[in-house]
Amino acid sequence: MSDDKTQRSPQDASRIAMGEDYEVQYWTGKFGVTRDRLQEAVDAVGNSADAVERHLQG
Image (tube, rainbow, N blue to C red):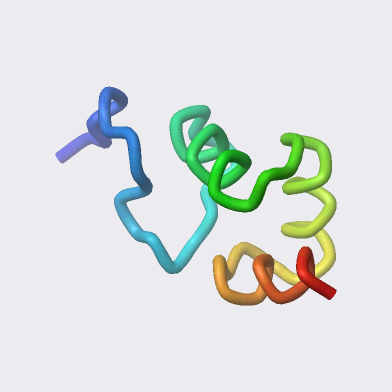
């Protein structure tokens, strides 16, 4: 089964998929950051949404 590209929230809310534009849009909106800042956070701590959120808050 392929991903539904019309879906507004991530399929797996525990992980951030930087390769999926709709997920990047969701997470940048949720965290209030740019795509570049989100990518920096994912690069620093991995794609766990909880870890990225903690990184962005600290």
